[in-house]
Image (tube, rainbow, N blue to C red; front, side):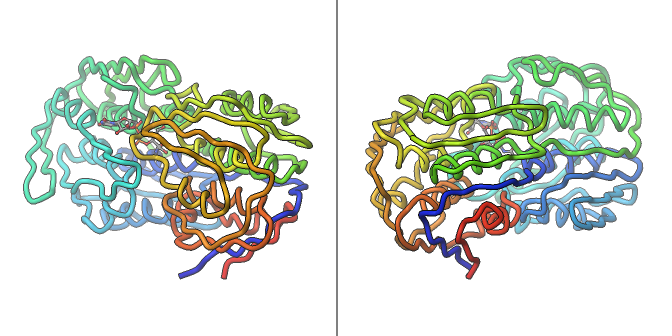
Length: 415
Ligand code: UD1
C-alpha cells in the first residue's frame, strides 16, 4: 500500500493551478445519463472518485473516454438500471445516480451507499422526495428497488439543506411531468454548476445557489460541452498548507468568492490574502488562532474544510474552538494529529485546539479524505519525517497532491 513520506519544515512558495471540483464532477457525471447525446466535460479532476463514477457509467452501458482532464460520455445506449453493490460501496455519492436513473428509465436498483466514516449518513431525504414524485421504493436484502414510470413534479420542502438530496431531486425532476420546486435547498456552488450543466443540455432549471430551486420537466435533453468549476476544498487545503508553513503562494484557476468563509477565517488567523479574478495570493508570517470555527451549510464554513483548518490551527498561537454541526463523527483525524504532538481536546461535536510551537513527525494513518488532508498539512509544518498510510482516502479527492506540493517546494514522496 502506498504512503506519503513528508519531511516537514519547508516554507511552501510558488504558483499552482487548482483542479476541477470533485463535488461537481460526480453529480455532473450522473447527469450525463439523462442526455440523448454526447457530453464533453472539461476540467475534470483526475481522482479516484472520478474513476469510480466512470466505472458506474461503463457498467450501465455508457461509452466513456477519458484523456487528461477531459471526459466524453455517451449514454445513448444505456439500458441497464442496476448499480452493482461493489461500486455503490466505493463512494457514498454513488447515490446521486439514483435520480438520474429514475429520470432515464423510470426505475433503478441500487444498494445503500457503504461505509460510515463521518457517522451515520442516511438517505431518507432523497427517498422521501422520490416517493413524493411517485416512485415506489421497496427495500430487500440491502438493495433498493425503485419504480416510477411517470415521475410527477411537486413541491419538496427539505427538512435540512442536503447537498446530495438537492442534486438527486434536480436529476429526477429534469424530465418529470410538470414543475418541481425544492425549498430549503442546499446552496453550494456545485449545485449551481449542476444547474448550468443541465441547462446546457436543454433543461429548465433555475434558482440554484438560492434556497429555492425550480425545475420544469422537459421531454428530452441533448449532449453538451461543459467546464467544471474549480474545487473550493482543494483551494482551502492548499491555502492552509501554505499558511501552516509560513509560506507565500499564488493559486490560479480558482474562484475566491466560493471560499468567503474560509478566507475570512484565514485572515483572522493572520494571513495576508489577495483575491483577484480567478486567483488568490496568500502569505503568512505569523499565525494566530481563528478563535471559533463553526461548520455550516454553504455559505458558512464548509465541513469539508474543518479538518484541514484544524491541521493549521494546531500550529497557530492560541486556542481555537471547532464546532462541527454537519456530521456527527467528523473528528477521526484528531487522534492522528495528537500522535504528532497536537494539543486537542474533543468533546462530542466540539474540539478545542491549543496551538503548539512545533509538531513532530510521526507515522499516522489517513482516516478519511479531508482528515488525510489535515495530516498532510500538519506533516508539512512538523519537525522531522511523517509517514501517512492509507492515502487512498486522499487520492479520492486530490489530484496527485505530491506533485502540487513539490511544485511549492515541499519534500514529499509517494513510497
Ligand atoms: C456533500 C458533499 C460532501 C460534504 C457534504 C456537506 C458531495 C459528493 N459530497 O455530501 O463533501 O461534506 O455535502 O457539505 O457533494 N442527511 C440526512 N438525510 C439525508 C441526507 C443527508 O439526514 O437524506 C444529513 C447527513 O447525515 C448530514 C447532513 O444531512 O448530517 C448533510 O449531508 P448532505 O448535505 O446530504 O451531504 P452529502 O450530499 O452526502
